[in-house]
Image 1 (cartoon, rainbow over the protein chains, first blue to last red):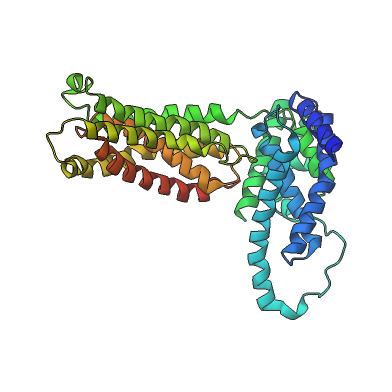
Image 2: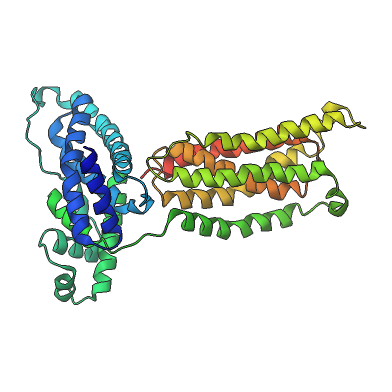
Length: 181
Length: 212
């Protein structure tokens, strides 16, 4: 546990100093932990645990956009869990309202046993479609087509700087839309 | 979008660097301060006898109290802009202005007085005090909330309340140079009510705009 958290802190320090591979490894490493926490939260709130993936993605976006509030001299795990907890409570509250409506309307169609599987996340993808064209194209190219920033720039006849700007704006807009939904 | 795809996208954006919260908060407050100062000179202005008043320790105490509120509140709001932060270990800073007021009130009690206590407490500017401090604090409160939005406060109402305290503290510093009521009893009563109004506004606004 301790070792794992020290490793995260090290990876995040490298990420902040510009090592994108370390950042990628860190996000990959924390995702299963976030997923488990999201499932526990959903279970405790009496909601289907297979909805965890939307929450995981919500947390990852917040981690990314708020990482400048992490103090590089402090351990990373408490910061991460504070963000995760905040996002989890937020989504449970939102879902709580939505599911309450569902129970009223379709009480009989809800399966009594929630599946153990994790359903694919849908909220980020849905909001992606409503982004301004340029941001959506860049995000899609990097996320779905796994193109690099360089290839994306060539594909859309943009400068690499413009791709970087569109990518960051896209992520910010996406997060704002998720919060407002 | 699959989570792996999202992670790849976030890693591709790793080069983006956001400004520190302290920097954004400072810029926002510096941009809002001239608005409050302009409101002050347009509506109130410095009291005419300010040169003599400066020799009165009770006049000077007003600035010590308001700044002892504003400065720790700035520090606490920056602290609360980090998600894992809590008020624990920081809240005592807010007792400093209260302590100064208590010391001022006891000091005044020991001095020979021309006016009875109730007269000093009620003063002659209470209505202006209750209007001017909240009004002049509004631009600063908006700026503080804007700055904190750049952070990640996980207790948005508390962070908003502290933003209210800091903006009320700064606005009260301006107002203190206009007001001719120097008794710490007046300050402890009316400045406190005005500050409470701004703090409540900050808490309410914060619980809405500081979520992330």
